[in-house]
View (spheres, rainbow, N blue to C red):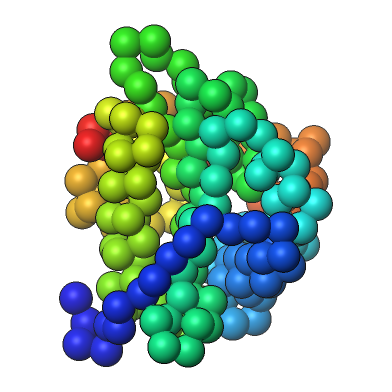
Length: 199
């Protein structure tokens, strides 16, 4: 972990956070500042990745939460992650999440929208947020398996999750070009790589 890493505090997001979360996510994935970090999707999509209305829909769904992370002293928003309990949030597609694949034998959750402010990436914050998310779903929902999706073009990001203990399932999910809520694709045949981890 980078020596510049500073401990973060976190809490569940509420309505008044939606605007700042949207700005953080869009800056990190699609904005000009996204070129500073590893989350940049600008070469694959145009337009926004999320907005307050989508977050409102997301948070109104049982079994869906967003954790937001701050510097302990300044309370500046550093990152966020969305989590969905698959036993509650069936076939939801929010915030670039693909529908969860249900397995009644394994209690699973979906991890999405992992975001770290671009100018503060590569300091260990992403690893910390993923660790907190895994602990949260294990303790709050008794989750056994976490599922997430990454654009298959983003090989460096897939490798990042594999280093965190995730496994490429071999499953792929086409991005729907008919749903522009999460951005307009710049190239054809975008697909998601599905990864999982037992926790």
